[in-house]
Amino acid sequence: MPESANSPARSAHRDGGGPTSDAETGISRRRLIGTAGATGLVLGAGGATAGYAVGSGDGDGAAPLSSVGAGRVMFHGKHQPGITTPLQARGHLLAFDLAAGAGRKEAAALLRRWSATAQRLMAGEPVRTAGGHDTGIALDAGPSSLTVTFGFGHSFFGRTGLGKQRPAALDPLPAFSSDHLDKARSDGDLWIQIGADDALVAFHALRALQQDAGETARLRWQMNGFNRTPGATERPMTTRNLMGQIDGTNNPKPSDQDFEQRLFVPDPPAAGVPGWMAGGSYVVMRRIRMLLDDWEKLPPSAQEEVIGRRKSDGAPLTGGSETTEMQLEKTGPDGKLVVPLNAHARITRPDQNGGAALLRRPFSFHDGFDPDGIPDAGLLFVCWQADPLRGFVPVQRKLDRGDALSRFIRHEASGLFAVPAAPAAGAYVGQPLLEG
Image 1 (cartoon, rainbow, N blue to C red):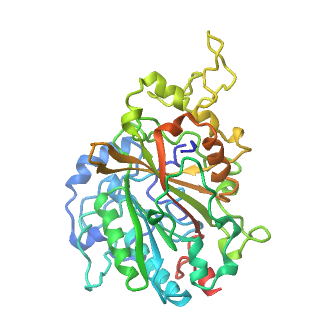
Image 2: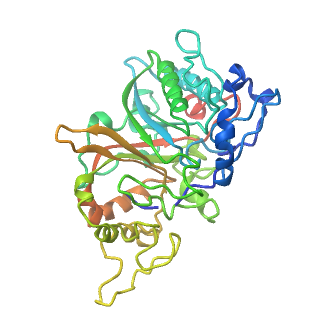
C-alpha cells in the first residue's frame, strides 16, 4: 500500500465546475418530492463546523438539505470527477467486459448512455430504468457529492479495433511477489468508480449504470467500499484504514507546483501518447486483504515500527505532527534508526523512489468472514498518476523487496485503466477515442 495526503479541501462544487442553479440543471431529486428539512437542522451545524458547505434552500420555501446531502460535484470539467474529489463515505468499483459481437459502435452508444445517466445522477435528478421509471432508491437525498468515473482497460482496445490508440502506459503491470491475484476479479474492458457520501445514493448510481449496460456489456466484477462519513470528526482529518493507521499522508496536493504533471497527461500529450488521453490520468486498483488477526496481535509500538508513524496522530516516529518531515537518519539511544529501514512510510517516500508520487484515494472493505471467523477485509487501493510505469510500478517494486507491512497484507485483485479527461458539455466520456 504505497503511502502518499489528505485529498483537497471539501467544497460543494468540485472537479472542474462552479455552482449551477436548478434552472440550469433541471429539477433536483429533492425538489421533485418536497423532502422535509429536519435532517438539515440536525446535521447542518455539525457539517459547517467540520468544514463542509451548508446547502441553501431551493427558494420554494423548502428547508435546506444537510451539508452532506447538498454537496454536488460537476460531471463536465477539465478532469473527470472522482480523482481529486475528497474521499467519500461510500464507494463501488466495478468492471465490465463487452459482450460477444459488441464493438466500437456499441461501445460508443454505451458510453453515451452512461455519460448522460452519470450527469443526471450527479445533479441529483431522477433517472429512468429499464421499466421506464426511477427506482426511488435515492428520492429523499440530495446529490451527496456523488461522482462517477469511467476508464478503459487494456483489453478494450483490441475488442473495438482501436489497438493503435492504446497507450503504452496501459501495458499490463508486472508480477509482484505479494500477488495472489484472482483473475476473475481483476482487469476488464471498462471500469467505473462510484463515490458518494450517502450509501443509498451510491447504490442508486450503481443500479442505474448496471441497467444501462443492457446487452452491450456484462459485469465482470464489483466491489464495495467505505470511508469515514464527512462530519464524523471534530475537524476534517486524514482517514484511517482498518489497521487503525492514518492512511493518506503525503499525497500530492493541488498547491504543489507539479501537481498537474504528476497526475494528468499533458495537453498536448508527449510524442507517442495518443491525443485522446490529453488531460486524462491512469488509475491502478488493487484489492488488498489485510491479515487483521495477525496485525492485531502486535502491540501498538510494534505496529508503529512497521509503518514508521505514530498510530495516535500519524506523526513520524522521529517526532512532530502528521505533516512533519520524517528524519530518516535520526537514531535512538541504542544507536538504531528511529524509523526502521523496512518501515512502510520510509520505503514509499517520493524522495526514496526517484520522485515517484501517487494520489491515493482508497476505500476500506469488509466482505464478511471465512469459515474460521477470519475477516475478509482490507483496502480497495486506488491510486492516480500521469504514468503508472513511473508512478505505481517503481514504488510497488521497492515495497516488494522489503516492506515490513508485506507480511500483514495480500494483494488479491488488480486492474490498470486509462481514464480520459472529462467530456465537454454535450459530449460523452471517451468520445475523442471512439469517434476520432
